[in-house]
Length: 116
Image (tube, rainbow, N blue to C red; front, side, top):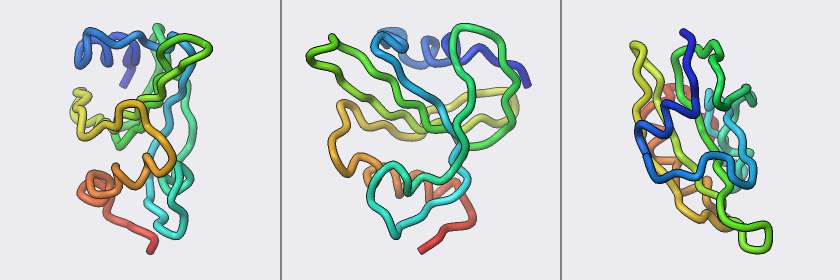
């Protein structure tokens, strides 16, 4: 289904400064608990922005970088896209080292196959 990722996130979080300092979007297909960083959320990077793009149903991790170049903030949001709707499942605001582990419970609730 075609979505405008910028519009979808702005609908969920109207105050977001979308991609002010950059960011990315990736699918989350598996969880690998042998690592404690972002690599534990296994998936592929996909195009996202203020344009129409085709997305499959599934779990998505969005990293949005806000703030200034001197003091940037990285926010991570976990979304489920299903039946034409994007739903926020969990988020980590101003994530520091180990941010990915804070999303593990939400990922485990959504992804059937987990690597341990």
